[in-house]
Length: 324
Length: 280
Picture 1 (cartoon, each protein chain N blue to C red):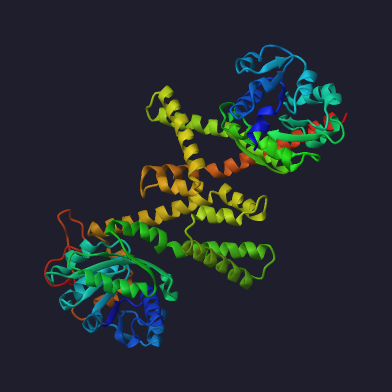
Picture 2: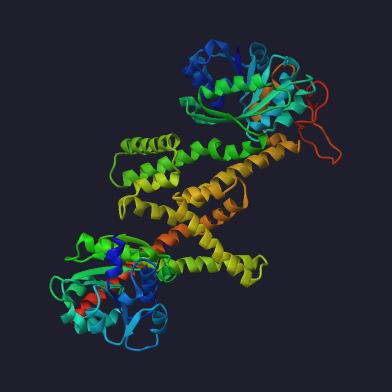
């Protein structure tokens, strides 16, 4: 089995690092493509032994499982580009936040009658094999495809199947979650430093404390509230600190954060669903590089409202044509 | 405890207020016979309900002490010194003196009583009157474990009875003495929320009180951590989690912690004041 990555950024790098460390696939069976060869992750991938190319078509041809690891707004361009090269064997796995299975299937149905699509939401700790991944299965994907993806993703952490409508919530929680943790850890370290600890030690201890607590919770049958109580001796330091946290609205901030991330994910999805995005929204260099690929062109499409812009999901026929 | 022993035990109450009544009811639902219970109060005003239970009444505190083994001192805190000096010479080493007066320390009690007297300080709370109290007691210097056990067996039908060091009594006051009022505040607010959303007030209040009661029983009887029970009520994306989020945003947890803290500190302060007062 060969695995390909369209996109060679943080996500591709993290997944490859995790997969190879877990031994679930060797690097020479992995291909990754990116228009931008200057990315640090590109050289990172190369060092791991992954075949790098600037051609998405090449990645498609060399792979069975194809991860779409590009930013959500690039997905439609990619799909139009690789659509003609997709074969029955291909399993397309989109990791793009907010991009629905139906939008991907709609695109690919122009090229194939039964494109096998899955959508997954993972997170960066796959890089240390402690990822949190969920996936949803598309219309034409089989049970074995789900099992295959699960096998891959379970090698780098926790993986489970969900209904697609939960994926935005997952994004808010475990997709963005590591960022919340990094922020907390930075601040905890600051607290340690304020109270006299050297920075490095403070970071180390803070990270270990969160890691240990998480591990305890995962291993325990007990509710986190109970585990919290177990740490708080009467009148002691911890309960005093917890009161401070409560007074600052710690809990509600975290609830708000998960909610905000989930809502934003839905917004991005609905922006894409509206099937309109202005060229300015797309990072110029990326667009240019995509356009330099053989067989890829862009046409401006004016719709009935007189608006012009790039149509992401509505193109009929063979790819997008360059506007003169 | 030995039921035979209980039935021979003689219990006295100095003071005939709500707390005394609640405790008396709880004691009688055990093995203590009404004929072995005596209540003393200066006026007859509150004695009627005791008499209805078959309890003997008197206006003499000395008589209460004379005819009892366990004496509950259930008068207002500022009256304690006066009452104890009145009966002190009749207190013997067979007596167990249990004070329910808020803020009156064991040290104060022992000072006012003869040397080597067995004194216990008890902090009940209002729901004792319906046999759902939370009671914490602390033993004085000469009160032995058996005295504590005796008190526990007498009171167990009043509600939850626990023992602790005297330092915990102020905390218990903040948590459970005042805590009852915090619950009433919450119940009122629940009802107001319902009224705001269109429910008639009387119905809202009745439902609010049953909600508090039901939740309380489930909490006590399930043995589960409240966080666990809370999670069990919260269906994903449902009404409860939305409501809880709003509560969290309002900082309810922090203010509740602070409320128990302020009530406890005030209890401590009052305890210090009354100790200073009784030393004059």
